[in-house]
Length: 475
Image 1 (cartoon, rainbow, N blue to C red):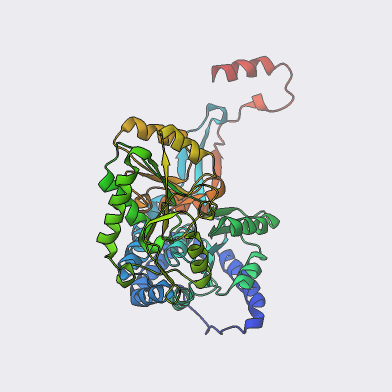
Image 2 (image 1 turned 60 degrees about the horizontal axis):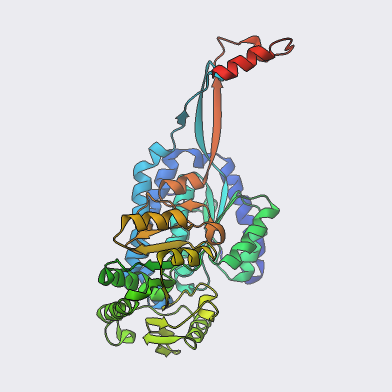
């Protein structure tokens, strides 16, 4: 059974949110101190309760994500609800193994002894989620935090208000706030949350806000995971299957109207095949969304007016090869291919996070590698080529969080692959067992036997140095 409310929850007045947050942290710290979350059986029962709650609230989640940005039900399931369910299934299947102390090889120096690593929960974890995948990117780290035995305070994004409310309802109906709680609200609430002391902070969002989170965590020396973003390139070599590359790039880019942290942000394509690739991508856009994507039930909308205005301004530079239509009333921006752009244009100055795809020609593969390495390390990189030698060269010569060869985005679908950034695109990785490890302190334990106690290490040392040198040399 889930750990549920013992007393009715009372909605706080707007002016006492700081007091409520302080109280939540105190209550969770007190509950963690009871040791209840250390029990594997308790963790499993709570994860099963979450699993059942998601199934009960599935339609409400579909409705909420549609209300926030007209996300198609297929994408809401495949990239949000279904993804979380897969994480839950894997965690429930493997948790009994993950929690077992892990034996490591002992050194003869400590003979007689044995050493092992115990996964220990940090305590109180705070998870701040983004708006673009408001359910998945809050629930996936929650699963890891619960599996590791932590109490959790969740902060969904206020930019997706309907989904935030649906998540708050799901969690409040399933768990006691002493164990798992939700704090809804805007910037002020986030600021109040960051003023508290936690044992772990997990943040998904922009690099700018990530810097704020990290500064706040530093005040209490709190460990953090930052899942950020950046301009993730798709590199298309002249020997790529262009029809396949076009289809997979268009799918990865325009899913969720381009509002995906690992969406291809721009294309570097060898100039001899650039025109064919553009034509193939335009063809795929028509196949996916029809001649009028605004009427397609499978195409999402921009999350709010601010993002719509920012993205629309990008269309003032470069040459539009296909798309470019906008409608402010419905926050619609057509799937757009943008040519004749350079790194001085606004569209290339920051992560686009929308349905606009710049295409930049390159002469050689080495030039593409140089372009990638000249900028901040991206969260993802996608390379299309039929040459194993070229694939290895790109993987060896570039630094990025993760990615695909001859595909886009699909590396996220495998929970056995850690997901995370590097440098400006983030720190720390999660998914599957990596989530459990992330929210667990790896406690090293040596257990020494009592039947033998060699006197060599104890003072007075006298003339034992040469003996010790020979012993270390022998080791």
